[in-house]
Image (cartoon, rainbow over all chains, first blue to last red; front, side):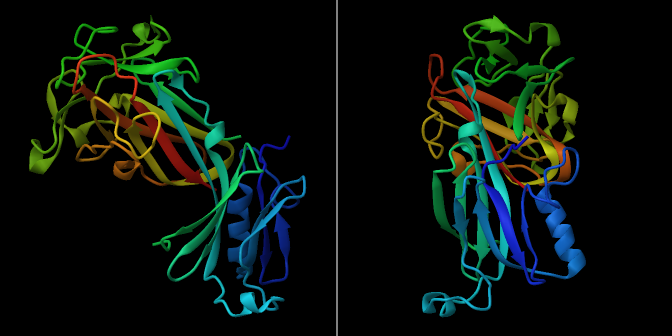
Length: 141
Length: 190
């Protein structure tokens, strides 16, 4: 059963490409999350992430600036590549005067490209993946 | 599937069910009694809307704010029903609120925050209420009113279940039922 809407996909410096929810990074109940297992793989392979994006099985994709070697447009080649990439999900829930509210409206998948002076983040709603936001945040400490 | 489960601890925990239940901060008379303006709650309960005392059989815990820095070495003070003690002496079992975050996969949590707001705008302070909270082990209360003043919760390593033990206390600044007063938890996980 698929329990996520917006899933990560990465390319690594080893040339490998992986997708959350697809072998070998399926969601396995009780096991480390696919992202935690990916971090283990990256460490063991002494690799680094060269690109990170979110996708849905319905075909939508959200892409961060990559760390690839051959970008096609000058706008990309002129920019410094990200120092690193991160993925996480954000979840929030309220309790108001009517009771604890469902947190489904406050659940997002997030990809981040870290630069020296900022972090560029793309947030995609887990409940309504048509909705997404781009944030420029202070750099990760 | 990620889920939050809120509980009011007691001899047995009372689950604060989604859509129907709230925490009621009440007076010394117990469920349904008012807190005097400028005083802090003497009892805490789970109320199933509109007025059922869901936690009545569970002897719910209560964490009453006493002082911000009147304890040992500037520690905050709290009353959990047995007099004045330093906030950082309270164990997990005596924290009124337990918020559990669970996921089918083993995930790490970070940047978790907890705060009160007016129920409409997360940056706005609750209306007519002073609010203090702390995570178990904290030396001082946090005046967590509005997201900018949120209480930071400790990062937790990979697990399928994460417990956040929270002390919470509220005081009315005016007469009347407080409806512009919501509690919120946020976290990141991966």
